[in-house]
Every structure is written in C-alpha cells, then in structure tokens.
Length: 253
Image (cartoon, rainbow, N blue to C red):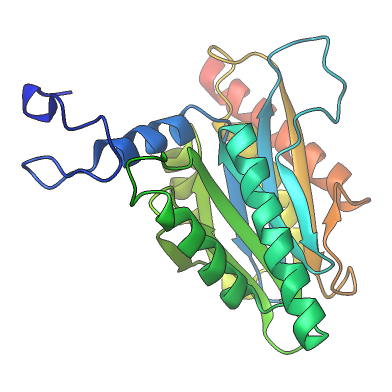
C-alpha cells in the first residue's frame, strides 16, 4: 500500500485523497485468496462450480461447502470468507422467505439480487462495520424468465452475466469462458465445460488437494436447484480429469 493511503484504511466510510476506499479493496483481496468459483448460463439452465480447497485431510467430504440453496429454484455460490458467505446466504434466504410469505410465489432472481446487494453495500457505508469479504454468484431458472445469473461484489455492485468467475484463478477462468458461446449451449455442454475449467485453473503447486463441487438448476431438473446432481456431476469430473491429463501431456512434450 502506498504511503498516500496511510491512515485512510481504518474505516469503511472514509475515502483516501485519490478517491479509494481501502476497506473494500481489502475485502476484494479476501475473495482473491479463495478457491475459484464460476457460474455459466446456457440456453436452458445454469451451472455453478467450485474449486473447494481442502485445507485439512481430517475434514469430511461435505465440510465447508460453498454452494447453497436459497429457494427451490435459486442457488448461490460464494468465494471469499466462508463465515461472511454463510451470513449472506442466511440474508438471501430470509428475503426469499419474506417474499414467498407475502406474495405466495418464488422471488424473482433480479429482485433478490437487488435486495442482497443493497444489504452488502450498506456495510461499506459506516465506520462501525466492515465490508463483507465475499463475492456471491446467484443462479435460477423458471418458466417465465428462463435461466438467470447474477454476481454481487464486496462493494455491493451487481450485474447479470452469461458467465462469471471469482477467486484465485478468476482471470484464467474468464479467459477460458470467453472462448465459449453460451447462448447455444445445452446443460450437458455447460456441465462438461464447468468441469474442464475448474480442473484446468487449479494450481497444484500452491494447493495440492481440492474437492470439486457443482450445482445445476435447469429445465431438466424441473426447475429445482440440485447440488452435485447425478449423472451430471460424474460427467463434469470425467471431463475435468480428461482435460487436466491432456494439458499435463502437452506440458511434458
């Protein structure tokens, strides 16, 4: 950090002389230290995939999951501080439950994203709180709107995407995704490419072990958000392992 920022990083409500809010940038650094999370939207579904770094061989396989169900057709994946992410998931579930109680239907994803992003942004405004060190990707599918994909940054900014990524290998994942034509992709294509991308961007030198997590919400799941669904999960893993082995073979030549 340059000397010009000295003393201006103690509060989330204070700007530095060059117009930066350092607390938000620190929250972004927390996201960058996390395993890679991607979301991809095809013509009739959404796939969320996570590189869950295994920090202890003693953990159970389903410990520290980073993909959650908010409502029956809405899924959320988190990158960054896991505790912060779980709190945001709880807020999203409360908003979805309140909307369902009031209107007797599932909350539209755009509305849910706006409510959660406003909540996240509120934590960048006051000196008594700190920004959430988490970036979240939300996905849904329904008969009216079709597939929808949104991402919320630690600053509270949110956008709709065809594909997005967060975490350590965000830029590498984006480079791989920019080669694809998502508007034409089926669920099987999305699943296979999700596996390829997560396995290819994993850095074995820095983090030897990781667990692949995936969720799917689409017409084929009857609009239900499903975590590690079969047979799609096995397709993704096989595709990822094949791509990784091919990449290793190319590097050895």
